[in-house]
Image (cartoon, rainbow, N blue to C red; front, side, top):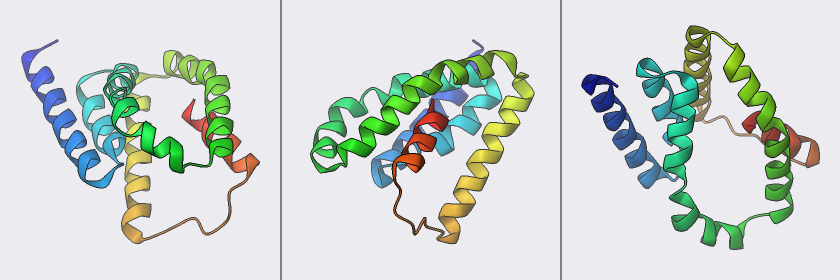
Length: 136
């Protein structure tokens, strides 16, 4: 990897980690579009996933006590089932198209957050399955 690309990834990781540290979420919204500039989206996803492992120690124990376990386990199951399809999509799609897709999704998500939009309904099993499958 080129030194400039490595510096770019390091900077993106530091900024994303800082946001995550203050807000508790949003690291992927920052890291993915920035990382996808210098590495393939599949590599960026892998790097984000590896860096998120630290959350298992820092966030998961207290979150597990406070969460809706049925919802979490339903989404986790759907993510595991959807994962092979997600990996397959990553191997088939053109890198430039994936980069644009990641960027557009990040911008739309950011726009929804900034606008104050909130989901007002009560999610149930279909929503949990849909979110989990999309994560996979």
